[in-house]
Amino acid sequence: MKSLHVPGIFAAIALVVAACGAAQPAAPAATPTEAPIPTQPPAPTEAPASTEAPAAPAAEAPTPTEVPAPTEAPAAPAAEAPTPTEVPAPTEAPAEQVVVYQINTGSSEASFTLNEELLGVPTVVVGVTPKVVGSITVDWGNPSNTKISKLEIDATDFKTDNERRNGAIHRFILQTSQYPTIEFEPTALEGLPSSVKPGDALNFKVTGNLKIRDITNPVTFDVTATAGEDEISGEAKTVVTRSAYQLSIPSVPSVANVTEEVTLTLKFVATRQ
Image (tube, rainbow, N blue to C red; front, side, top):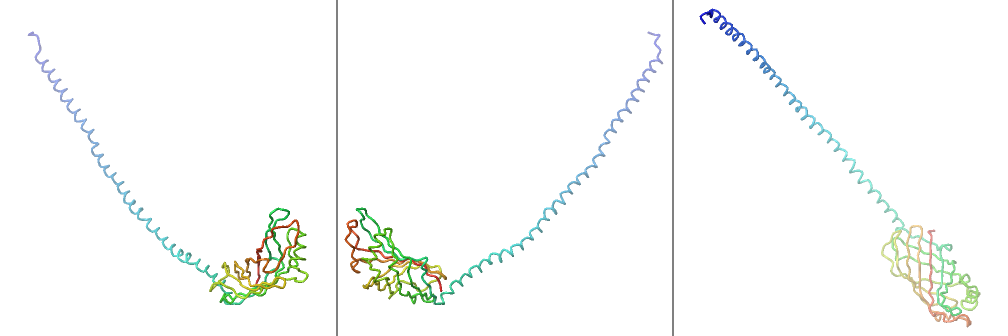
């Protein structure tokens, strides 16, 4: 033990102290790693907030697009434009005129209808002729002044669906060789409106004297008509009795139970002259 060399021990301690002294400078080297703190300046990266600034003006920019409001100006005139279409009022012009309408033979017809038993079978008999002559004078300003001329029907032209019946009607009933026409002369019109315009539907009565063969009786026709500026069309109807005109039916075995009442109908179309 006495052989230990004291100076060697001190030398070792000195080396340890020197080593410790050398190790301490290494620790401060770690502190430099904290230098990234300066990286905080990137806080200016908050500048993107400035991107919000353009957003505000961008949102307000669309407001100018409201300028289309002026487009409402044309809308007003467009809506009012159709009003001129009401100009059809001129169609009332005929109301200031007295117009004559002639019955059109090609589009009109006079007919009679009655019932009988033919060979024991109930039968409706209809006799028709298109040969009707007459006219209607319309006062568009005062319809009550409207006049209907004497109407003439060609009795020689009446036809039914049976030739033998046609012969009997002409020879024995209407005696058309002696009385070729049936006449109706109006004496009064009732029920016409105080005013009328083209296209109106009318319902009225026409009273007059109906002459069949040599017998004349007063009768009243119920009339429905449509008045047009260039044309008047309609239908007139009445019922008469055979006895009132002494229209006797020949005695024929195949015909029986001929009705006493006869319906007379005039379907007419009259065109402006």
